[in-house]
Length: 173
Image 1 (cartoon, rainbow, N blue to C red):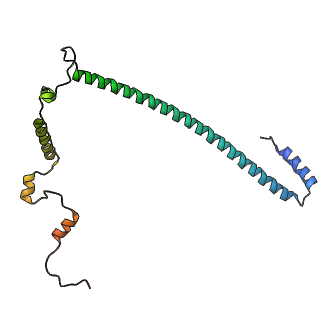
Image 2 (cartoon, helix red, strand yellow):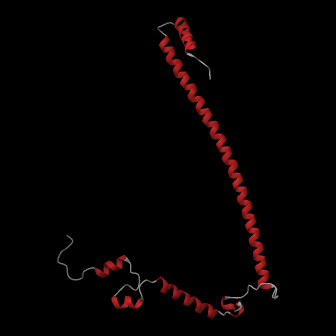
Image 3 (cartoon, one colour):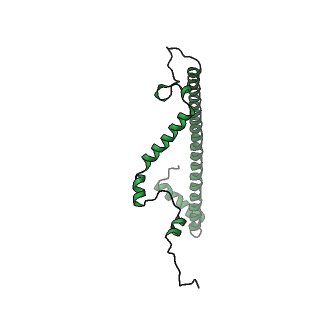
């Protein structure tokens, strides 16, 4: 900015007093102050706008870099998955050599072709039963003996179940 010292401001003030006159000097000084304030606000707005534009450009560049990196990673993963799938399919369908590892054995070492649908259904039933037993905190025999809930009841059904029955002498009106 302009380097204004105390002496320079004093000289400007004396010249303004002589040129403008003592009657109009306060109005002119007020006007000069408001114009100076407007100029400062305008410069600050321009600076902030330029800074905002620069930051937006940097963010766009960063977004482009991240998208490129994500696209590269995605393509690498897809290539890796397709290669692994090809290896698994070739091992599953083709080679039965002793040198290549065999991936076609199910649970307990039996080949998948010997597993029947009955075995799968039985295993599914056992899994569901064991899961229910694991997730249940209270055994069924205890619930039956002590009157615990065996199944879920809705709120309306519980209200209807425990609502007192019998004649009521009071009327609504």
